[in-house]
Image (tube, rainbow, N blue to C red; front, side, top):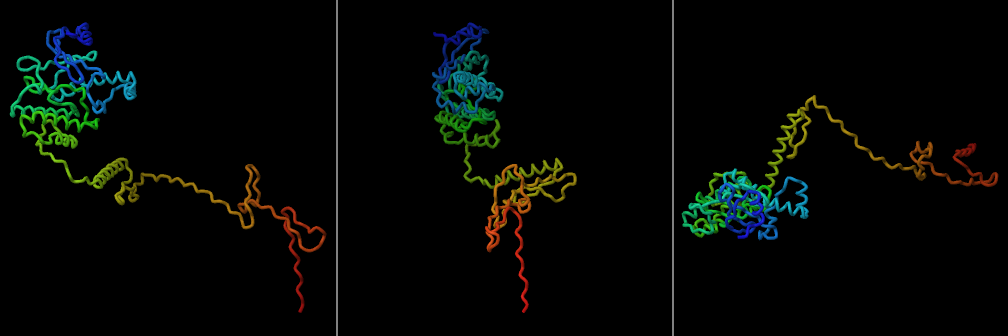
Length: 382
């Protein structure tokens, strides 16, 4: 018998004393029967590399998973060589984490002992004769026993979901029939229902797999929406390990009143804000057209009015008087008095010829000197 390199390493380290034989081979791992230094038979699970696994749609199961190191998480997201290595480590260690999590919740799973170099040493699940327990798919059941096994596994599904865990690949091949009842195995693909959006689909498929297999012995359990009933209770935070399942769940057909939901949310927010303002000694709020507004009436004297900042007023364009054209003023140049008085710079006056004779050339006005007034003729005597 060929001993895998990973087991040979554990033998040299003294973790495993002897490799007895291979037990089974799955989609993601190979399982061997080994003997530990204390002389007890155990199970050694060796995980396959990514290129050798036949597990499909792996991204559906890894959604929501993360590692504590932000550097490792970034490398995993970028799918670099280092990130792929860390991704493989996270995939292998996911089963160990889930097993410890489920054992604390009371789910019957194998007890993990050692996890080293990608090899998981676990408890050997045995049957009544002390031999390795067979899978559920390898035994024959009568109707009463099938119903008993189904009720037990359905209760295990509920316990797992109470801890936000969905197996993701639960079937008759991942259940061992021990002397103490069914034992659920294989959790590398288990998902966290609170973080994975595919959790509902995976849960419904797990329950359907159990119903289809065990329903061949007892057809009365077929066609009942146990999975939908379990998930509905989980969404409403009503799922408990001792919940009574009826198998008569029917989805609601009435449309949700979104307007009413929004009004309830707004009302709750208003009451919370009201309590907060009372605690701080601020004026209460009043509802105006279903919108909270500050009530200025009965305002406590201890609350000082907030200063209102003056809004900036845009400068109006200056319009020059009729007959006067606006002229640009150079920066830094002195502003003429006419500009300060009239708001616009003076325009150059055109030279005008004086009508009539006298003095040759017409006597034009120059500069800004005022023009002399014309003499008034005397009145005639009639």
